[in-house]
Amino acid sequence: MLTVYQGLIFLVRNFFTFLKQSILSLVTSTSRPFSSLILTVGIADLNIQFCVIDLACIASGKTSRSDIESVLEMSVEPYLQRLEGEFDIIQRIQPVLSTPKSRQVKYRIQDAFLSFWFRFIYRYRSAVEIGNLEFLQQVIQRDFATYSGEWLERLFQEQLAATGQYSVIGNYWGPRNKNEIDIVALNELDKTALVAEVKRNPKNIRLSKLKEKAVKLEQKLKGYDIEYRGLSLDDLSVE
Image (cartoon, rainbow, N blue to C red; front, side):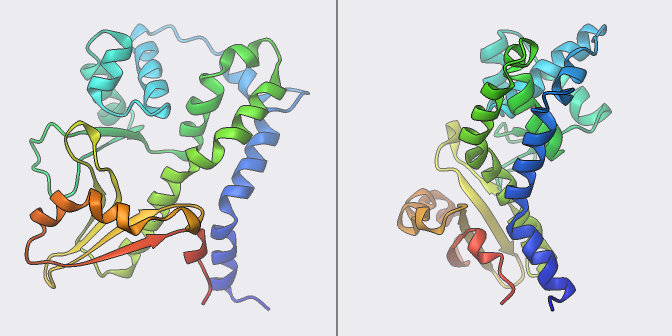
């Protein structure tokens, strides 16, 4: 008989499969698709409309202010501030070890379901509006593994935080979004650091490539004992 802990780990290991199947059933229901209900809601406030467009950009991978502005060809700072401060929908993140005033800033949607909706339903709303839900299902099946990778990173970050072994946990990237690293966890007392790459499939982990991307990070972590690790769904085990 499974213990409570083993049961929770089983759910976590199968979370992405359960999530994909549940959402697929919900948003592609031929009787009354959830997405069509949302698409019929009018948005009278022009500011809210721009906030919605910003969320769509973030969900599609345009996560920096400059990226979003390059798409919309307009300043989006007030809308990002509103989404973060007033609505608490997005979160502002910076690379580990960056200064508070650093211009290296990205934004991410905090809620998993809302992120999914903007990534798939809003983006392909034309297909929804004409009732081509089979197309929507094919897109979700094709892109879900890549999309869910970010949420797996967040899951491991939360798991590392729960150990109480680290004082700083986050992501790292260099100028122009180069050399992105999924997880950097620091213990500032012991001067130890964990630098990790996260993949759903462990066969796709390349620690040699991770070390190449971390060359400049190592310079910032002078004096730290650095451990490089690959994390995948296989690491969410009961053993």
